[in-house]
Amino acid sequence: MRPFSYFIPASLQEALAIFQREGEGGRPIAGGTDLVVQLKEGGHKFPYPRYLVSVRRLPELRRLEWVEGEGLRLGAAVTMAEIEASPIVRERYLALAEGARVVGSRQTANMATVGGNLCNAAPSADTAPPLLVLGAKARILGPRGERLLPLEEFFLGPGRTVLEHGEVLVEVLLPPPLPRSASAYRRHTPRQCMDIAVVGVAAFLALDEAGEKIAEARIALGAVAPTPIRAHRAEALLVGRPASPEVLGEAALMAREEASPISDVRGSAQFRRYLVGVMTEAVLEEALSRARGR
Amino acid sequence: MPKQLIRLVVNGEGHEVAVEPWWSLLHVVREVIGLTGSKEGCGTGDCGACSMIVNGRLVTSCIFLALEADGAQVTTIEGIGGDKGLHPIQQAFVEEGAVQCGYCIPGMIVAAYDLLRQNPRPTLEEIRYALAGNLCRCTGYTKIYQAVLRAAEMMGG
Image (cartoon, rainbow over the protein chains, first blue to last red):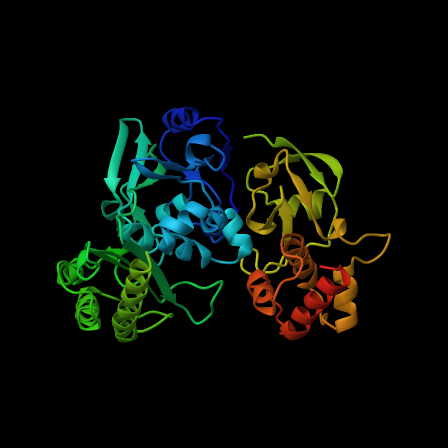
């Protein structure tokens, strides 16, 4: 690695002050499983940073807290292993636990953080589709104060987010789950572990009081567009309609149309589009069966 | 920026080391402290040959910055089996013939050790999942998994 300076602030305020004092050319670092590797490879995805600010131990970024009436506060520096092991995440936001579980290896999961997964902004990030369907908001702190954004608005393109110089993703906020609702995430990879999603699909479904019609639906797709995306038109096909295999199938076909995949070493555009159809149907079925079990 | 001083405990022994911010924990352990059991394979966190336990968590030390190990308790392969003899996991690897070229084995043993202290009687599937981040390019996985199963038995899990 080429030289850089490294700061380990004791508080979020101190971290923000370091970015102000040192000026452009700095980046926050948490687990380092993406960033350190990119630095070792020469940092061609972005200008090589002059300095790094370690945020992995900041208390404000380490929360994993259920707040009654508010939902889950998930600090950006909470690790994949901690998310996967969290009883509250497994019980109320299962898709997120499923996304965290498949990131890298045990070693990776012990280091990698949810904030890093989002800020690295890979279209294939495994926690992104789950967080999108769970209605996540990103809380960002910077020199001009606080921003609270729907996660949909966080990603700009591969490796690019709305974060500006001196801004830090502090936490992700998840609303409490609706009654009779559930979520699921699956990805397709040649290997089960240590691999990157060819396609990732997350779904969230909430049923009406009779348990027959779909009251709310969200679908998110990974690795099939420049950013993780919501399949809004597929969602619209589900809301208010009976939770039947035919209706889920229609939505899956629509999700296929909403994907805009590229061909690369992991799969052709055609294969990816095909996978979106098959996997969306399967993930919707899984979310439905979980919602019915509640 | 001048070198910064970190203090860490490696296998129960305290060390004070002046490090550059871009040095990895693996570099410090191998090149400064002189414990060369941990190997660098890929250098990018993919192969697990450099696996260590830092503050109770299994990590790939090649992408773990040394500065982040300030104040840490570190266990390397040397802390598992030492001059006094082989650890039961190592013994099981020998008995099962799980070692071919040997380069991945320190990382395998550390990862297996981390698994068995959390899950003393893992299933084959759990072993495969726990060791997914440790590559053996001799492809000796079957015997490695058998060795971990045997080690679990030997350790009375």
